Image (tube, rainbow, N blue to C red; front, side, top):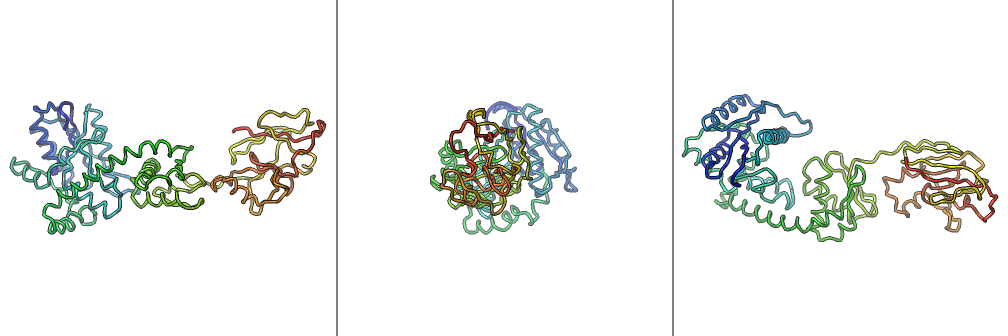
Length: 436
């Protein structure tokens, strides 16, 4: 615990937080601390108001200011425990800001570390999740990580400290409670020092994680970037990394892309995309989809098929294509008068006898790309050869004349509509792309 400053103590009234407050109060002068406590009444249990009254009486006896609030957690889709935890930490942050606290102290102890390690082994978390709780992370401090639960109980009994009991801590429907009540006693029968052993293992994993995190930081900066609402990972770059670093790059991306902490299964599923063919995808929590493109993994909400109704080309004028994210400017003029600056394409207007239409692709579309000997090719195969990601192919615009494709917009014209010769009097369709 750093000396000096103001410490906000998260006080539930349980024995752990009561001992934490008592110890800090005992050493406040030595450490130069100013104390403030905070208690959130979740209003979920019949005894919740009594718990709050206990905390108020304890703080009054110790002369420690206390901030309380009554608020029920309401987060659809989250477990009651997760929703309560989210609400509690938000409350603590708000109180810390209001009272000018330098740190928020919570009463996590050695047994919490051991139970968390077992719980995450059961659910799957990778070395990141298996690492020990940090004594300090940001403005959160955990001064009691060295102490076993029995140490705290003994301290409370020795000093005559009362405390409250949360009945939900005994309910077997919660995984942590089942581990505490059933698994830890069995492990203790094999190793009486199991709590200390598991806490030490978690600390060792934490050291490994700290080292690997430092090694992977430069790769995260170069292999992950934002593309609008999507997060993009260089999958070829990830595939070249050692497995331990590749997993951490993917984990770092998932932390940014998901609203819940990613599990080991999520990391491995996305990492598998990096070594497989393009076009595969996996669905992640919150409806996030990871898609393997030719060079990248794209994470975000699933792409919606754009509404690509056929639109007549304005001649002369500008045609807006909202589903393709562009506009087309077009005019017909003699070749000598048509604009020739960068970005303009000239097509043979004489061949465009029917109305020119801009549309999206359709099953069975074919065209004969200019410069490929006049051979017809499936549009789908052409886009695959050009490595257009699957999610972007439905945004490709096609300039058509009757049943013929004149131009795959922004890519290649059909050789039948290419301008041949250098006749300055030849009338051409001059067309270019404008941003929306």
